[in-house]
Image 1 (cartoon, rainbow, N blue to C red):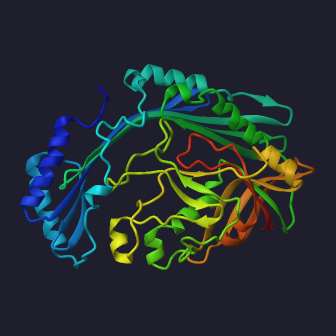
Image 2: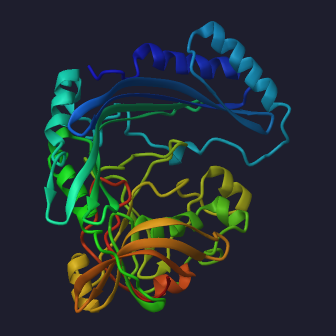
Image 3: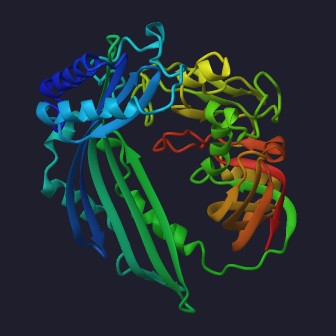
Length: 448
C-alpha cells in the first residue's frame, strides 16, 4: 500500500461531490483531489538542526452552471460540510457573468489509460520503508564541508536539507473521466559558505531531485556546493561589451521559460505575448528545437494528462526555429477559435543542435566571452520580448575560465537573442522537469 495515497473512500467522496453538485443545478463538474506528504531533515554544520513532517489534502471543484463557471477548494471532506460548501459554491457561480465558452473538454480528448497513477513508473516502492532514522542517516552522510579549509579559504557554514515526499492526484468529472497520477520524490540541497583570505564570504549551492532514492546524488551535493563557492574567489571587473555568452544548464530555463509562456493562449489573447501571430512561422535560429515529451517512463516531470484530464502527447513546440504549437485549453479554444492542444507544456525538452557537448566544449569553440552561472534579479517584458537581467559567472578567454565576474547586466530582446543562438549542449540535468542543456549565444550586450 502506498502511504498517504488517495483511498477508495476519498474517491467515493469525489464521486458523491460531483453527483451532489449536479443535483443542485450544476450542468458540468470536475473534481480534483490532491494529497501530499513530506518529511524533511535539515543539517547545519554536520548536526541535525530541524526535522519536520507535513501532510496536505485538498479537493478542488470546477463548477459549470447556467453558462457560468467557478473554482472552489476545500480541505474538509465530510459529507455534511461538503454539502453546504457545494451549495454555497453554486450560488456564487450563479452571481457571475455568463461565459458560453466555459465547459469541460470533449470526451474524445481526455485520457483513458491513467487509472492507477503508476503508469509512468514514478513511484519508488521503497518509499514506504523510509524511517526517521534512515532519513537522518542519509542527511548526515551527505554532509562533507564542515571544518574544511585550504590555502586561501575556509568553510564558514554548511546548510544541507534532505527530504522525501509522496504526491497523489486524481481527477474525475461528470462525463465519466477518472484519471490519476502518483509519484515519489527524493531531494537534497546544500549551500556552503566560505571566507576567502581577505574575509569575503562567498556561497555555493547545489541540489538534486529524483523519483527514486537510488538515483539521488546524495554524496556529491556537498562537494559540488563547495566547489561552486571556491570558484567565486577573486572576482574581477569586466567592462561593458558585446560578446559571446554561455548559459549554464542549471539556470538556462531563465531564457527558455519566456518562450513557453509566450505560446500560451491566455497570453496571446490578452496581447501579452511577443510571439503573437507566429504559429507556423520561422522566427528563430535553425538550431532551436523544443519538443514537449511528457510520456517518458520514469522521467522527472512526466505526466499523462493536464489539469483538464486531456491526454498528453509528444508534440513539437518549436522546430528548427519554426513555431509549431500554441498551448490552448478548452476554454481558450472556444474563445479564440483555435484548435485545442494542452493547457501548457508539460515536459519541454530543448534539443541539441551543435558541435558542443557541454560548457567546456562551448568555451573552447567560442574562444572568449562570459559563462553565466546565475541570474540576480531583473525582468522581461512579455509583450515585447525585451529583457534586462543581472548575471554572475566567469569570464573565459582562449577557451578557458580566467576569473569570476559579478554585478553585470545583460539586456536585449528574446527574438534577437535566440536568432544569435550558437549552440545547444547535451548536458541537461535530469533532476529538472524542463530538460534544458547549456546554451551558447553570440553578440550579447553586457554592461558593468
